[in-house]
Image (cartoon, rainbow, N blue to C red; front, top):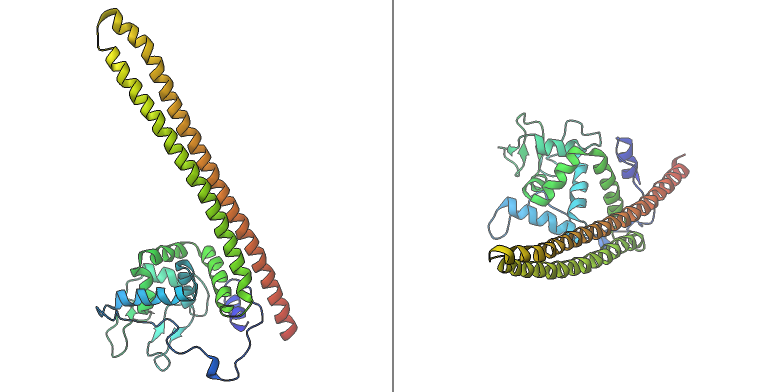
Length: 305
């Protein structure tokens, strides 16, 4: 709960927090070292820091059940604090406002120039002033195309970053606590159900549309061939053939155009239904998160007054 309060106090979002994680009596129940992401992880085969660190960071967060977007959102916490050589071996802050929670980390990562720091220490990167730093695990967010897309999104949209961070951090707080993950997993299952059901419907419509379009195109091509053959002569015969076939060809062209338009409208409607279902589910999750935030505030107030 203290971390949640600190983030909010430093200008960050309100985060749902519920008590329930019990303190361990000793270190016997703690996870072994190596289960959290390292700042640097060279590839064991090629020795490449770039490839190894990207793979390492993604695999650790994937094992814990976090998406690529949640990985990047949680990395935004590097807006706060700094590294100390005595603790981690690395040195320096990520931003010039290390006590303010913001999207500054993503802006620095994208807009600043980062070069390898020349020093007697582990691999890290520095800006032209030498005052700011980035770890290889930070640079991995730029090296990976999918992760970089979220960096760019959060650099432009702080409100979106706050929303995604609040959800991901709440999920992180409850990771591994029996019973707490159930509520979010049920919501995730419902979202997936809606997506799969509507995708199934869209697939059926797309297949039917493709089949009908192919049949109409075949009829049209046949009519055009027959019309061309009939009108290849001269005089009255050609004029009569044109009079007979041109309306039929136009009719088939119109039918094909209407079919394509109708199928497109149906697919557009199904896509809108999918977006509506996802919006409703997001609103539901947001309500639950809001309730969790209110409950957390009540608990903190009862504890600290």
